[in-house]
Amino acid sequence: VLFYWLLASVVWYSVVALLEGRSCVVNLDTIPHLDLEPTLTISGSSAGGDMAVQFHVAYSRIVSGSCGFTGQPYRCAITHFSNETLVRRNESCEAYDCAAPYDVGMAVPHCVDASGAVCGANLTLRYDHCKFFPSVVKVGELEQVVRATPVCAQNRSWHDQIPGCIDDADQNLPGARAYGFRGQYDSSHRKGGC
Image (cartoon, rainbow, N blue to C red; front, side, top):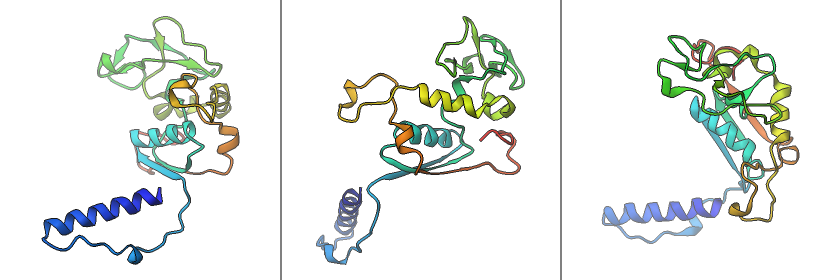
């Protein structure tokens, strides 16, 4: 990662120098040595926060930390919790207590329980149920979801992997750094939903 950062810096300064009519000679001795870990961190806000959390769990071998501003837990958006009532897939409403608020095209397309079983025919979750109905979220069931997901083999190329596999969370996540944040007055992510 550090090598690519240095290479990108050299290329950027060379291009700027050319455009300004200056010399393109870069003295690598003047670039400071940075003692960085050879891993990456990821962050995002709202849907980007969701993605940061998903990516951190799925690729925990290479990601050392994540920051999810108003991000949901791993696979929360598609997990049917044991204390939750499903709704009809084609139901639409003016509030978030249905599958497709405001637009039928927004319905949750895929729904599974903690064991990986698919939700019933023509049934799905309330849209953004983790954000708007955080009381249904059961952390223990989310842990089951992670443990039930197949682990990718470390010495295989990506196209030889089991579909949907993730890095070994038991091995990689205990020492990982993660930060989650929800604004005190955020009305689109209710308290407890991040």
